Image (cartoon, rainbow, N blue to C red; front, side, top):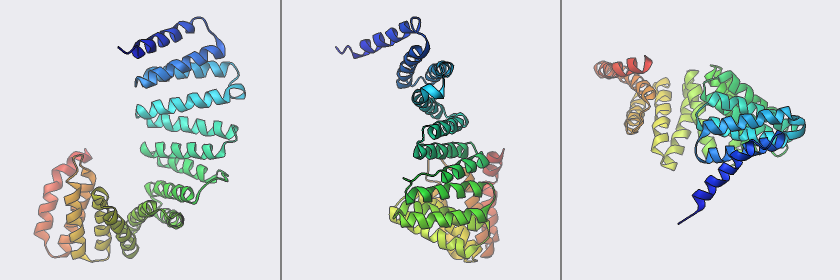
Length: 309
């Protein structure tokens, strides 16, 4: 019989017993060790409480001037707990605090990474301006080790936040620069993502030819990778672009196939399913098939009202 679980319990109890016999930085170390045990048990709330108590002690004992390394370690644990608890706003703020600590440590590469992580977390909470500010700050960090691909991804993230803020032309400018860098880095995946977001912004700007150009490139990428999930969205982009170009028969073909693929997914994206149906109704109306278009709109009415409620 394995004694490992019993040994683990004994070690944990020993650490708890030491809490009453230690103080200052030594107690903070014990709390840190206990937080690791809680994290391994997926007890993220307990882990957070232990980490926060340890952090408080270190700040009372001298803070960043003396315990910078220890505090960085604890803040990393804190952000992992927030992410596991899906507390993305708290995670974003913690990444921002870590970015300051990495700056103090003169680790500029890590500082930029924390700012990027904060930008992604704010994006998840739909705080577009805060996301943009963090990605701009990451781009501004003087990191001599930065790669061409990372520079491209920074611009892609900046473009995504700008698009959410409705600044589509500024988004396009960033996407185009990102695409060039990702191409220079020989990374087809991120070139494909740039084409996807370029198509979306050009559609928002009612620029059919440019939307069609990038949507077609994104569609080709999804066909080569044989990714049906991405193909659903690439056909949606292409169909919308073709509508703007008044190529209604081709638009219908791609939108019909997009719907077929979107509805295959068990976890259905109802928002996009409704949007594609509306685009398809526009194509059918332009093809003088108003009755078909109206039937389609009638079918999605309840779904549309439900997701909008």
